[in-house]
Image 1 (tube, rainbow, N blue to C red):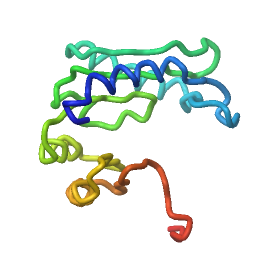
Image 2: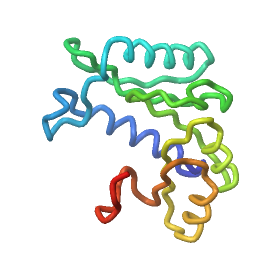
Image 3: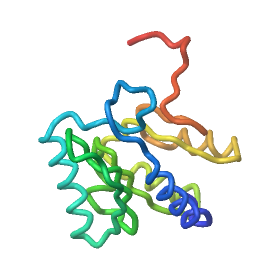
Image 4: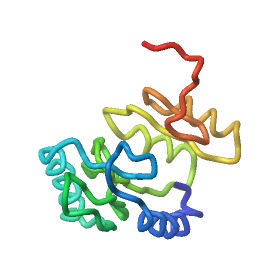
Length: 155
């Protein structure tokens, strides 16, 4: 996120993370369900442990002991060459980096061989569209995330 709002956003994000509701994923009031199995839980933990070993800061909130839950995790102060930055974790983990310019943001976004999806959020629509066009990802949303057009056909 933009360097000028980074600290304030991180503070608000941590507060929101403490209110996440964890439980049965089919329950509509639940924010976070369990991961698929213990093996995936271990993979996620290995990513987070590696980030800690590399000097990153990790913020986590408590989850139930029963079930296959991994705590919602925020990783900050991480190097751009870190594995948690370059690879997709497939777990409740957010890696937050700041940027100064749109060009720097695009470089950060494209710093992966995967690039399944991305979101661009800004009040400047022209900047958002130009940035979205430059990000190498399967789907890029502008000012939203995980929203699909109901008129789009199935593949």
